[in-house]
Image (cartoon, rainbow, N blue to C red):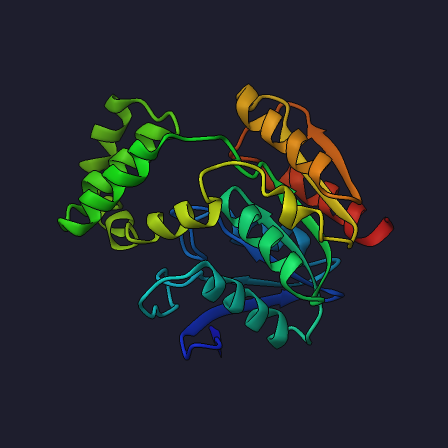
Length: 255
């Protein structure tokens, strides 16, 4: 593992592999390098890119510094891009796509931007309030269960997961659910932010994903001045690296 120090002194762990132009991958909620989609995706991209996969703050090998602010997560990503040479392509999935979008608007380091299903789906304040209550009470497992219920995981499946050894790892990063919630800022497309992103952009959605996610991808693409929208047939929010990597390679290398 390598590490970089963010602007507020937080250590951000990352790993690098492959050869070619720099590409930074940004995880969504409840994911990090050792538990999520980015290592398999990075392996599928190593032929064409020098791929940087990092742990967002509060996860994996990265530290954390209170109080949380979205601006600090933007600084984290910019620090990783700095370690990659100062300019890089960036790909983000889910809430990580929202963070990647905000970072592209914050400075010139992002040279091309790819987003997979940013979940800009308007939510009531109930989730935010309940999540905060559970985390404040130290009920991390219940906070994870709340998130999973919100994104459509059946209660029976959640009950089964809670009985598995891997549940403790989810509880360990449960506080970062509040970070993802803050990044999404109510779940609406940030039109004012998106309008300032002038670099080439690609927004992807899965053809088998729920309609709200596909609609959010379409709305995000429409808000970005230079974005194209692409649907990956048969894919869901849990997109397969074998389907995603060729689409990213085509965009970053050939467009």
